[in-house]
Length: 131
Image (tube, rainbow, N blue to C red):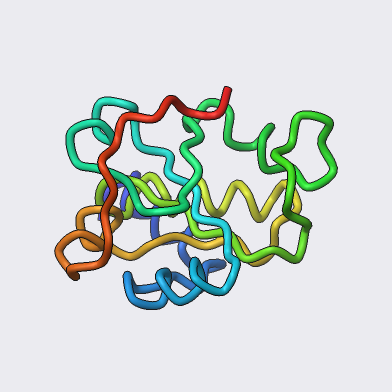
């Protein structure tokens, strides 16, 4: 196993990762879906309805439940599902969100591409990320 594979496996030990259909249930029941994919990917492939695009570089500041730069409408007990292209970067990001105070943060197995392949709703993409 390579160093990055070990790093990823360690990050996933604290996550209760979700399938596309489980993520859809969480989304429809009020969970927060955070899309960390770059703008170019969102524009080309689309977005999960109701997701919030937050570039990875801003993620911890926008999702620190006690931070002054946090997004409105969530608490430390909110369910947060992080989405990337294929479910790798999102695992690392979700682990980092747990470290800043979101113990229920997790990620989408297979990422956005698994969501789309499962036939779940996709909206045209291209919205700018939350600064």
